[in-house]
Image 1 (cartoon, rainbow, N blue to C red):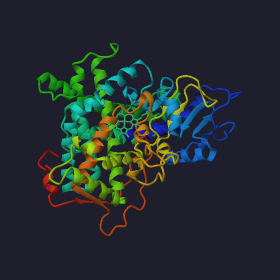
Image 2: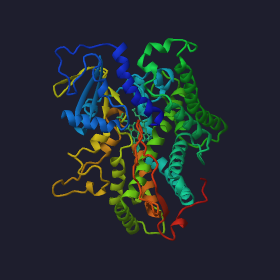
Image 3: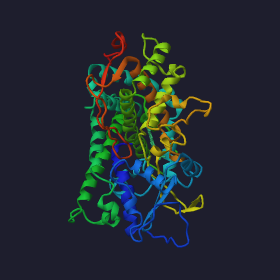
Length: 511
Ligand code: HEM
């Protein structure tokens, strides 16, 4: 999920609450018992309780503690918001009642005006959603990832290590190039060699333009405004939407068109798009070209930033927890030896390293509030009434920092997953929440997990990651708001761990 969506979605949730409050349907509270929530103002409802100033997941976590409930219901004159701060509540509603809670809220600007309704991430529940979901899920299932995508991941991780060796200060840029290159190759058979790649630049442009459009756009608040003409005073948002629409269309169309012309010339590199073009569609009511184009478009927008954010958090953690790093490297030295790089086949024999990967997903969750779900029917939970069209925010951050499950949750501690006499199963695997829930659970999770494992094991094998000499290290890192939460820049140094390490990196591959 790109920050395009991110900023928009969270602003959008707020905007939706405000918007519906003014123009949406209203539902009487008379006689109903709703789930626990802060007291509502008679006119504005809970508007003042909905956090907007950054780190919203922390504010929702604290609000839950203050009212003594893991489920928080809020309303703003007719619209409904339900925040789930515990894994148990998310499991009960989003997993067990997936048929009711798997839609997405209405977002006028991004879905209706910028035309992003083609994107599976934002799609409302229904037949079309099911058709897209089935295909994307199948293309990124565990066996497909293992068979088809591991060689691509391996090549691009090795390229990234070479780039890091030459220019360690460009860490985040190298991570972005790697994530973009893997995705462009598996989706379009297109080799990315740098961040200057035309398709990557286009995707970045879409993101930059998206960031300037908060979901709290005036049209999200007053949906009727989408019908006023573009020349009308105050209709700047309409012209903005047209530009964004064109950019996003180009991002979806240009790499797809390249595959089509290569297929026509008989030179296509096998990839998701070329394969899908040769298969029957799951839904005969949609145009095949459009369908395949949309399946391709969703992958970059969902997969690039998320992978980068998880890896940036890992590198940050390594500068802060040298003992964890030393233990992982000791294990790597015992299992891999210093004359080669780790492979997927080594994974089973690296239990400590696997727990470092888990901790990287838990410590600072990449998507702290997931993507908002929306309910399609009235429901009841623990005696509280949940109306149809309630926006449901799973607070993944709160779930993965819940002291009932994770001791000292702010510490990066891979040992927490080991069995103890008190807790024979160890603390729970964060994947049960980090990738979302129910019928909207991240379909890219196996792909993401493989990318994280190989990057983390390989980087730890060849490099020492530390605070720069003479630096006090991380003093204040902040995490961006939005669907994908990235850490702010932090000081680090990355140097080869042993004399032969640079020789293991194939620096002659295209970078
Ligand atoms: C560390 C990496 C990643 C994390 C933590 C992550 C997490 C998530 C989360 C929390 C959601 C929302 C689930 C919900 O609504 O309950 C999601 C949705 C999604 N993710 Fe990922 N993701 C990651 C990587 C990827 C990758 C690499 C892909 C590409 C194949 C991908 C594709 C998607 C798609 C298509 C959706 C939308 C699914 C839907 O709405 O039905 N993700 N992801």
